[in-house]
Image 1 (cartoon, rainbow, N blue to C red):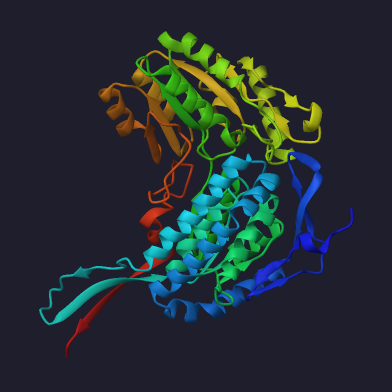
Image 2: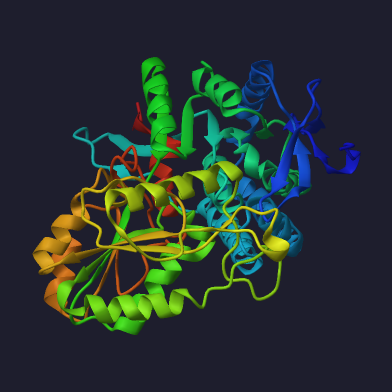
Length: 487
């Protein structure tokens, strides 16, 4: 296929778009694998060196700006993103497979995040501390880490980069950004918004290419002072180990196997609707997606019947088509992973209640579509109840009482998000206190977090730091303690 110049996106380094010598990489539309959304650079490690040196060179002048001055650039970037919302959302839907309404919602969230962090430039960044010396003033101030490496996944190609880049910039850092190749066209358009906002040269740099090449080079670079990563547990652990070995600060958000508990007294319609939304929106490709549903034995049959009835109403199709509720898996590799786990569930003895097959009819023949899938007769030790699938697959598990339900919910290496559906305050409080997850929600789906609230997991889900809200300040800055004497 001939490469069209207008759909080739370069790296963005020192305020310029730059194409590399190697042939670019194609980004494929998962709704129709015969369509190329665009091309991005297949960069070498030398490009990372160049980007880091540029970011290092821009650091001093950027950090010297006031918070209000840095915030102005974020406001302008928000305006640019908002003005291009429909275009970027359509690119997101075509490139990643998220339905167009979801893609528009995510892009609008990116706008809101930028405006939130723009305001951070005018908020307090330290505190006065009493000194034992009556003639001294002692206080703290926040200072930037320096150059920050941002490594992001394909499942939220607008929101996750923005919620990492925006706080990094407002707190005075410069950034080298490496997006997942599967969503790098969308990432390039987000960076265009920062460029159109007039961001000074070298403050934000984009490098695309293989994770093994670009990601590893970024993690190992001696002048990258902080690394923020969202992605798989395996890759996250490698990043953490490499960063720790050279003393770089790191932040990891990794997997989830998120449970929903449905108590006997739950409103079944509310619980079912939230379970379906949490499990099947974005084709189950959210780190906070519902994966395990732990249901009180007494109501299992009623819950299961209603869940099955409503799941069968889901429309599956191309992400940009009207009336589509669920799009494709984001890639052929992800589709194959989901199909493999469905076979694992069958072989383990779980009962397939619905779904389980690839969809290939009509205009879906060239896409990576799979039916929303529900397994019942699942026990907690099965692989489909323990391992992250990252697809539209629910494992139904029964519990005799609330104590057993919470025990099953906590029986996971992960601890990202969890939900309960109940009208009983005692059960709510027990769940809030005993659930080992960084995000717990009552009578709401497991997926989703508000931008002003801290977000992160426990156990193997994260490195125990938090993103978003003012909690982001803890990662992107260091505390400097200052003592001033008059003489």
